[in-house]
Structures are given as structure tokens and as C-alpha cells.
Image (cartoon, rainbow over all chains, first blue to last red; front, side):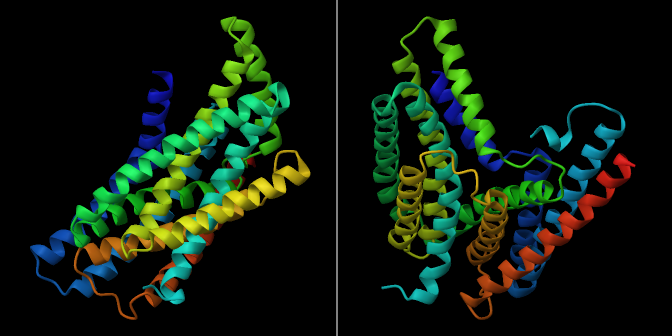
Length: 84
Length: 249
């Protein structure tokens, strides 16, 4: 049972290691799907939004992780992404 | 039939990602073998490889039944979640926010943990050692299986992607057998950075194709995406160093 639990935890951790990051990526994909399917924008414009959105998610997520670590360090608290 | 220009990104992504995962699994298998000999290590590894093989055999035919666009969309989203997660961690490690992965430290910790487990549970150490090797190979192998399926399934490149993963396994086993110690000199974070970049690029590509986007330049778009993710990852790592430096001051 421990092995099954570990396998499940590994599978979940693979895709939702950071809940906010996963939510941001899914939000970008849903936005692009809505733009193409409902807004009827050109698919290529949707592609541009998808790419730009994902690149923005990388920058904001890394900066947020760094700020959390810096705040934890300044407060002398453990935690933040340094504990990942 | 595939062309090399189509297959090369899938093969290299599967090779590099598998290299990272196999190095991590190898460290634990080596700890098991050092403590209890190669028998429990080999049995645990073989058991895990059998389970992973069964997963591939069961999943493979099922994938053929999923409509291509739906498969591309699901795999693309999973790749984005997985790849950007790797890229984020690698950028944070490059910026010094998260400590680097230390295979020597993991080896020492795993060896100590095995001895402690045997004392605590009063169980045969061979059994615990075998299970530890089994779990390590299974958990790391699951990621390899996902990566191979993810980069290969969208274009019928499962075979070439599997070859990339197998080549990584062979390389780690060969080098590991020669040096007989944890492969701590592998530039793991650089590899993870590169793999995060490639998987994220594949993720955007497949998600877009799944949503009906025809990328200009077709497969060449993958290289453009990879360059953009690389530049963005490096920029994010540079930006991440500032708050940490200010906190240290």
C-alpha cells in the first residue's frame, strides 16, 4: 500500500507540484481555447497568446518562488521553494 | 515513416530527460547494492522494469484509440504542467534559491536510511533493500514512461523516443559500472534546465495542434519555442537572484 501511495503521490507531484503554477498554465490553455472556439479569433493569434502566456507564467512563477524564499530567509523561517 | 528532422527533437528530449531520471534511480540502486550486494538491487530493479513494461504494453494500444487532436491536447497540457514545473525548479536552482541536487548526499542519506529501516522494522535488510530499489526505479521510471509517451505519441514517434530513453539507460549503466559510485559530476541542473525547455516547447506545440493551430514552419516552430523558453528561463533565473541577494544583505 505504501508503494501505491508513493506512486500516486509521484504522479500527482509530476503535474501539480505547485498548485498556483498548474492553475496558471490551465488558465492560459482555457483562455486560448475560449478565444479560438467562442471568440472565433484566428487560431494563429490563439497560438501567440498560448506561447506568450506560458512564457509569462515561467517568469512570474520563478519570481514568486524567489520572493517567497527571500521573505522566509529575511524572517529566519524555513519554507518557501527552498524546501522543495 | 519518420524523418530525422521530425524525430530528432523527440529522441533528444527523451534521451536527456531519461538521463536525469536514470541517474537519480541509479544513485539509490547503487546505495542498495553497496549495502546488501547486487542481488536485492538487481531483483528490485528487474521487478520495477517489469511493472513499467506492463504499463507501456497496456497503455500503448489504448493510445491508438484516442482521436489524434484529443491526444495532442491532453499530452500537450500534461507536458506544459510537467515541463514548466521542471523549468521553474531548474531556474530557481540556477539562481541559488533551491539547493542543487547532490547525488553524493542522496547516496549517503539513502545508505543510512536503509540501515535505520532494518533496525526499526526488524525485517530482513535484503527485503527492504530490494523494495527500496524497486520503488526508486518504478518512481523515476514512471517519469521516463510519461516523457517517452508525451514526446512520441503525438506524431507516432514512440519507437524513436523509446530508443532515446533506452540509450540514456545504457549510458548511465555503462558509466556507473565503470566508475562504481554516484554520478555526482553529471551537470544535473543544466540537464534539467534543458529538458524543461524542450518539454515546455513540446507542450506549447502539442497543445496548439490539439486546439487546431497550424504552426508556421511546422516542426521548425519547436526550435523557435525552445529558444524562447531558454531565453525566458535564463531571464527568470537572473531576476530570481535579486530578491535573494537583497534578503542576504
